[in-house]
Image 1: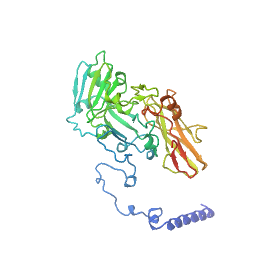
Image 2: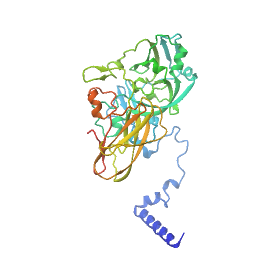
Image 3: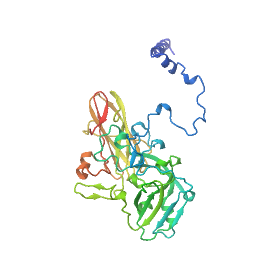
Image 4: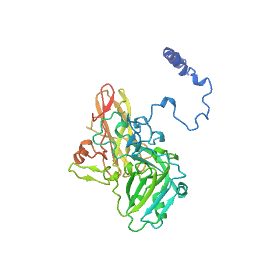
Length: 408
């Protein structure tokens, strides 16, 4: 190091030390070259938390729970999408949807009955289920009312589309168990029933049952939590979340769908002409920018735009981002891995000039389907459909950097 370079280094170091001192004694202790308090004594014992928990400084990152919510009724909690990185959702932040509260099921007493149009009706214990060959896959799960067509006034990404999460699911192919029972030739549907107080019941096409449907008992490497269907749920990749029946106790193989409460009075799409679409199972391509997003604030200069995209029809092929209210669109980079029916994270470098603008993203899946604008979608579906709103989500950025819902 030359004498001149050494002098500059010492000047910069002195300035840094001076800045630390000016910020107060506490900052001086915690900032190099100071010694913070947590370095002066041993930390917590490794056995103090038998089940690990997040740092106390992350205590504010929790599920979005509506005020006054009664969990024993039809209720939901949302994933804080704007606070997460990557594509996997921690089990403690996974969104929830319940129709009769969360049952407390003893796995030793739980049974799965398979009957109807089968050669060999079965009643399986959880040990029986786990004896079948298992596999693990990363898939998203999304409620079809995420959001409704008249429920787009929330402040955050969680408020708007927080009824989606993504995890690694472990279980048995449903096709394996059905083949063990032996399907009769006229078997066309399987009616799944849950062991909750609502006896949640949905009809599943036999083609899906014999494709990628799973009987799931673990999530992100640990047994399902009660809120996610412990000890057993059916999981249908890419289909609306209500069909992945939790606390699964019965599979009735039938020639026709059951036309149950949840697929007649609910989970149908009311159209402008008074008719209703029924059995609209697949979740279409969708995306949302999670940073910057509602209630966050940015400053002029470089800002990375990042968010999530997904489709029930396979893989995301691309995500386009506008930073000028839709006048132009740029291709975002997709973070690997880009998986089948899983969340895909996208990123776009952006230099904000400090002027008011609107940003948004639109997903394109491997079938070529392009996520529609809200105007284009409602021109076809109207405003009473409620379910399967996959429209583009805009964020309005004010001149002071505050980000707000672009629909408002």
